[in-house]
Structures are given as structure tokens and as C-alpha cells.
Image (cartoon, rainbow, N blue to C red; front, side, top):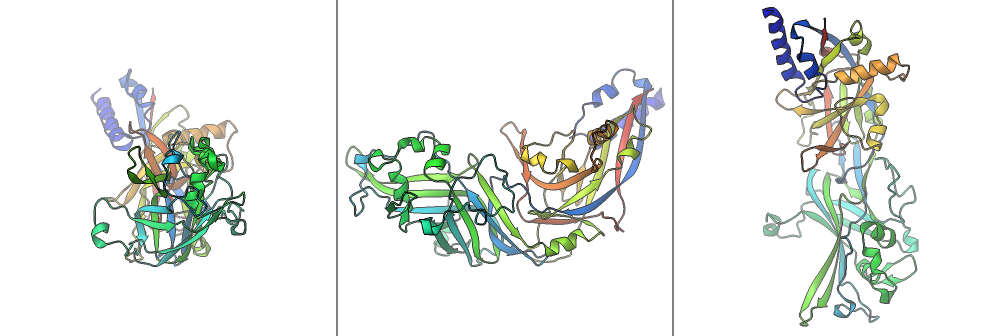
Length: 482
């Protein structure tokens, strides 16, 4: 009895170390009732891995990226551009027409000015590098039912309104650290760093009407006196379909930085008076937020990527749209002679190889990894799935140990074997893919989204067909009643 209890206590300790944050559906039943009849077994198997190229990834992030850099690892160029639509408050209202004081040469109301503000939180590279972006007007809104991948080019796909037809196109030269803003203002905690693009040139809409700027066009789309309709501003869908289909912001020149864009805001300014004839400057803002579509696309030279994929002495994880690591799991070996056993834990560790490129601009390793069956590589993201700890699992980067640990993928192994036995398996039935991702959590700290990591990250891992640094092992704990 004493020896059996000792084994049980050891098993409990192993569970605490190896599967405390993963699925434990079978844990209670394996440790309660008939304890003396519990039989425990452990075993270790070898996992094989290889790098696979990610031609493109689904671009569904609410964070966008803008800029062009040279990858210090490959020496190749990566450019990022993005599309965004704009959100409006429900039933938004402009001031009454008779209160407006900004008047144009034609005697009609106008916006005194209009601008696009591209706010950014962080960046890669040199913030003083001279860059250039071009703002295009979309011909039509992005569609909710279309999966836009990172290699989607709206210019090539005809989604951009032609300038010959009056489509808006504005070039802007900038540095991320805006030296035109006083240092005291830039150092203020309330200052939000941004790229300011003025939209004050004459603009012609699709009906052939010309306005002094883009803001005047928006305002006159609201007032019925100018053929507008306040109903267009009732919600974001109506605004997008009737007034502002969205913009495409292209990194069109310069090299040296890539900004992580947190918000794109369209502002227009006008003067109005209140009931006491006091004059005010009014501001109306429409923002690219998580309520509307935002899509990043990349132009990524692929020659060096192919060389890295062909390097069999290790495997790579590289974003955006770079390289994933494929894992072949020894499912048949794990399940052999254990058909009636419960797989209580199946744990493996991926060891990072430190970067050999010593540069001020070396890429950071991805912080969160997702493992899913190879067959789910596209459907997982297209169906907006999240890690369920049954057939999909997350692992975080441990900077102390320089590792990523998948604590318990036992249910994935079992599901693969079951599909095999039922004749439902594909040729990739025992393969999984490890993908860098970004996760979001709701107010109750529940996982709410898992999307591709679109930032610049890179790391090498021990593994690959010609690996000489040591095998990757998966440790398995089984249990069953005698």
C-alpha cells in the first residue's frame, strides 16, 4: 500500500509540473476512487521537426504596420502597408446647418481643414530614417466575407479608386520622430506620436462634384440641403458604404523603420456658433478601430527565406509571413499497447538557439506560439477559432530558460490516433504546425482571439532532419485501472 501511495504522490507532483495550465478533463477520474488499483506508466519518444515556408497569413489583426526595413538576418527587404475603414458613433450628428460659420467661395458650408493622423505605439529600426507613405482612397469597402491574406495587394486587385476618376492620392514624407514638433511637446506624457497627412487639396467625388477638401465632401454628405443624408452617419456600416469606403496607406519610399500603428484617425475641422453666438472650432473624428476592418499586407522578398527553410540543421520561426516549424508526432508509437490507457500528460520543449547576428536591430523572438494540426493551418484562423487545449495549444516564451514548453498535448495525440483508426485521417494526420501568434483576452481574462503575429520576429530552434544539438523528446504519462 505504501509503495502505491508513493507512486500516486509522485504522479501528482508530475501533473503539477507538466499539465497545470492545460486540459485536465481526465485528471479527476484518474485520481479518485479505487486508488489502489491505479496503474501508472511513463515513456519518452522522439519528435521530428522541419521548417516550412509561410507564403502568406490571414491578416485579421487590429494592429497595423507601416514602413520598410532590411531584415538583419536575411539581408532582404520587408515592406508593410495597410487598409483601414472608419468607425462612427451610433447616430452621429453634426451641428445644425444654421450654426455653421465656415463658408466657401460658393457660399456653401466647408471644412476649414482635413487630416489623417496615423498614431503609432512602437517601431523597429531608426525613428529618424526618412520615409514616405502614400494615402489612397478605396474604390469600394473591404468585404466582411473575404479572407484578406498578407500578400493581398489592393493596387493590383483593383480596390483603389483611380486618380483619373478623382480618387484621392496624397504623398507624405516623414520621420517617425517628428522634428517639426517642439521637443517639450514630444516629451510630454500626453503627446501621442503620429504621422500627420493633410487632405486639404481639392477632391472630386464619384458623382463629379468637386470640393475644396475631403472634409467638405464628408460634411456635405450629411446635410440634406447639399444632397446628403444624416442616415449615412447612423453607424459604421452606413458610413463605409455611403461616404468613406476606407483608405490604403502604402509605404512608398525610404528604408529604415517599421511602425506598429495603433490608430488611424480621420479629422475634419470647422467653425460654428452656439445659441449665445459664441464661436467655437468644431472637430469631427472617425477612427479605424476594432469595430471596423483593418488589414495589413506585406511585400516580402522570398529568396533568402527559401534558403533558411532548406537549412536542416535547425528549424525557424519567422514573422510576418515567413517560416513556421512543422512537427511530426510519434502518434503510433505513443499509442502502441496503450489503447485503453488515458494519456494524462504529453509534454515537449522547444529550445531556442541564440541569434548569431549581433546587431542593434536584431529581431526579437516571438512571444507566443500556437500548435495546431497541419490540416487546420488555414481553417483555424479563417473560422476565428481560439486555443481549446484539446486540439490546439499555446506556449509562451520563457526568457530564463530560453524555451517554449507545450505542457500537455495528450488530447491532440489521442485525436490524431482516433482519426487514423476511423479512416478519417489525411496524409498529414500525425503532423502539427507551430505558429507565432498574438492573443487577446476579454474583461474576465478569458481568451477571446488568436491571430497571426504580424510584427517582425525571428528565432531558430533546436531540431531539423540534420540536427546535431540533440533530439526533441516528448514525455508521456499514462494511467489506467487494473
